[in-house]
Image 1 (cartoon, rainbow, N blue to C red):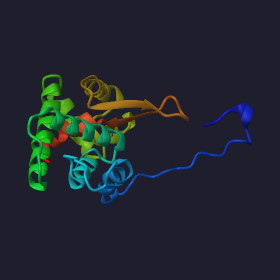
Image 2 (tube, helix red, strand yellow):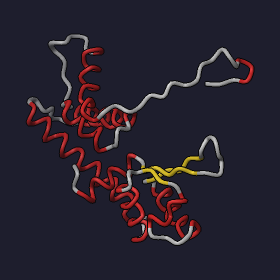
Image 3 (cartoon, rainbow, N blue to C red):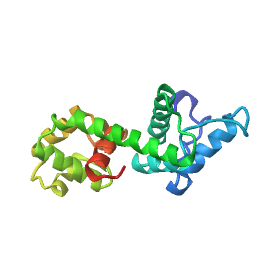
Image 4 (cartoon, one colour):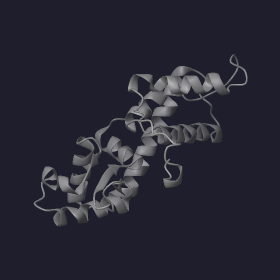
Length: 190
């Protein structure tokens, strides 16, 4: 937060790094400990291991992980069968996650041309974050040749572009959670 009128009163922002993947299951466990009305009798269809898998799959995007975890719990609540033991919970989550990945893939499959799909696969393999100036790493000879494929990926919802706060001319392109589900479907990561 900054304001020219309050200079000197506000401190520089504190940089907070991501949570290591190995601690992701503890996010769910700590939420249960905090919000369960009775620690001995609560029901949650999501196992902490599955929460950790979702965290890993979505590259640490905690907001999306919590949203998908909520969607899964709502799915179980809306269905007639509630998994009662750990094996049933794991199996139910796996089927649900595969369905989410399949649905995301089917939603974009018809929209993307082969070259855009290749750009997408490369984007994920490069870590999911890139800029138009990385065109040569994607096998293009110029930014104008690269842009149409980025636009196709943006319109399909598998990447999103943001302007750099310091230099409005620079863009950062990032694979979205939906894009990560599409990638998981294609590679069998579920």
